[in-house]
Length: 547
Image (cartoon, rainbow, N blue to C red):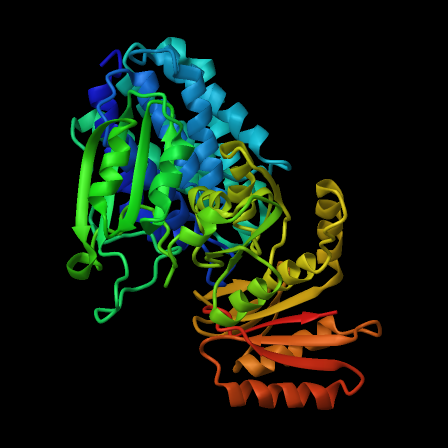
């Protein structure tokens, strides 16, 4: 085959998505750090599969426009650092081929070169031995050898070989990979996608997904069969725009009719999702914008455990937006990523407008963060990611909204809480941003979790289920109980300048156990104030701060 048209590209996209879904666990297991994480394979698969579903739902007879749609959708579905970088690779590729109705070997080469350039620009401090190296070396191979090929099938076969050679070399570029005896997880995820696409091109059919139940888990909680569903009908559709009506008018019109609203405006189409008791009203408003396609209305009382493939936010017990839509626009608003009733209540007490449910094993997408920002009746919104793996996704939001968005790069819950206390209503937006960035560093954070896999890290033998005392990028101790891990962290984090220890205990810790731990800390550090607070967070037995 000398050229790729949209019919083959659609099969290749479907196949790439299925291949990564099928192999996401193998990619997850390549992560070197043994703590439970928003793992690379899962995040890349959620990013790409969400984008593929949105793209393949439309009939786009132009190859360049099809890939441009995939790029736009991947940005909105991006989860975690790996998902954001993947979205930038796809975005870069689309820039290189957007004008092409079909793709030749030379066009694919141009797309790969653009993908490399865009991906490297997206990362402030590129690290070699990662997915960036793999896309760079693939593009360099393509640039140096494309004249040797007429068939895109043969060209892609050679690209797969070059990519896997680059992937196999990543341990020689990153000592942590070599020590763990693994290749880079992000690079493996990228190659899994490319291999899935190549298989479809070679065999003329897509790889079949093995696990059809794989679903987005960030902002979605397991449904209770006895739950009182406030809005009965899950309503989804796509509007092919034919009218000039403003999307903001449509959002405002339907906002008070339900919750979990998602309105994605992307050039010629609008993707809509809402839980409502009045789907007829929503559809009447939508028709004012254009023609409707891909209409789906589910009665959630009977189907609440199905159809979670769409990456849509479903906050638990979310109230309708009636009051919010009626609020006057204020100057400042705040959105924070949090999980656990106690932690979320603390953020609300600090005037956070929207809580995005997520964290270490549940990285929200850029669209989840964007939806939260759009709900806040404020001109300027500060986002607190509270996890290093969410910062890149949050950074994409500003370009997708008319509001001014600042991302305060908090990497844990205590940093988010501390940063918020530095806000000064009388200061300028930029002054507040800098003050919150600086003040977040005044707190030291320790976290106690469990080992998600067996490993040997820097001579430390770790077994699945061991309790881990973690501070920053370091595992400070492996212990038998979570309480022992807290004591080990205190030995590291407490110094002569410390004045306060705060312990947030998670959903798996009984209150009396946490209180006894607090009493032990008061005895060990009589000169410090010790607070024990119910956080309710999963994954982490304890989160602690020292100030």
